[in-house]
Every structure is written in structure tokens, then in C-alpha cells.
Length: 173
Ligand SMILES: Cc1cc2nc3c(=O)[nH]c(=O)nc-3n(C[C@H](O)[C@H](O)[C@H](O)COP(=O)(O)O)c2cc1C
Image 1: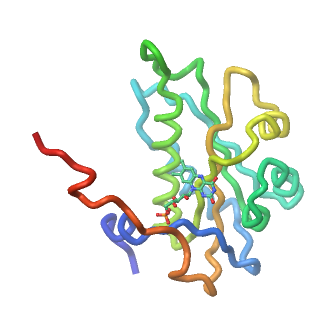
Image 2: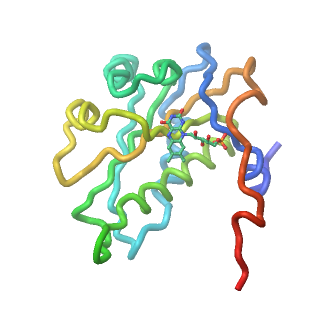
């Protein structure tokens, strides 16, 4: 059954347990990557690119970037790389982090739409990642999206739905 956007936004949870019997395929990842490709960016500069880590050999190498045990069991990773030279520059910061985060969010929601599970990963060793993927100085591996088929044994038991209330979050003026 197709979920509405409201349902995707309100029911999506971070998934850190994956079904080991269901590897991810390139074809399954394409709609997710397309959602990232279509994301908006400041001035439409699109200062980003994605490296998909899918083969067992490359996934095993990528495990060196993280010490989070669940990370080693993910069947695919999308490394989101920002280009500080291409992003729109504001006086004291560039918009690379904003643009890459929006692209990641598009992909996170698309994965949910497809019945897949995903976790955004910021806690990883960027320098090891840079070396592994031979990322030049002007670029930065900013986030990794781990994607796979959710382990049914953990359905409804993952993620953290706690959010601020509307009163805590919003001021109308
Ligand atoms: C920018 C960002 C970085 C994150 N980094 C990690 C991470 O390194 N490891 C991890 O297990 N979860 C990570 N998460 C997942 C958050 O812990 C999770 O989204 C949050 O607890 C809310 O839970 P929910 O996604 O189920 O709503 C990250 C999420 C975001 C948005």
C-alpha cells in the first residue's frame, strides 16, 4: 500500500537492524539516488556528489570509518560528499552542510517510501573515509546514509519518536 507523504514523515524511524537475507541491489538504490539528485540547493549550485558503497569488498573497507557495531551489518552505504568550492558562500559560512543535509533527507524519505530502512550517520571518521574514497581537500565526506531491508524482528522497536511539542518549537509573531 502506498504511503502518503504525511504518513512517511510521521511514521519513519531510524533503522539500524537489517535483514541479512536481503542484500541491496543497484536497482533498488537508483530511486533513492534520484531523490537525492532532485533535491534543491542554495542558488541551485548542487555542491555535492554521492559514492555508493555496495560490494562486500568495499563495504568491508568502509567499516573502518565507524565504531558503531550496527554499522558493520548495513548492506549498502551512500556517502554524501560536499564540495566547499562549489557551494554558495555566505559571509561566515558556506551552504555545503545545508545542501547535503537536504539531499540526504530526500533520500531518507524515499527509502522509507520504498519500505526500506535507513540511518543517517554523522559519527564517522572523515579522514579515514577521505583516504578510502580518495576525496580531495576541497570536498568533504559529510554524511553517510546506511540503507537496507529492515529486519522484521525489530519492526516497531527502532528509532526515537520523541520530539519537541509544537509549543516548545514554534513561535507565531
Ligand atoms: C545529522 C544526523 C546525524 C546522525 N548520526 C547518527 C549516527 O552517527 N549514528 C546513529 O546511529 N544514528 C545517527 N543519527 C540518527 C538519529 O539518532 C535519529 O534520527 C534520531 O535519534 C531520531 O530518531 P528517528 O530517526 O527514529 O526519528 C543521525 C541523525 C541525523 C539527523
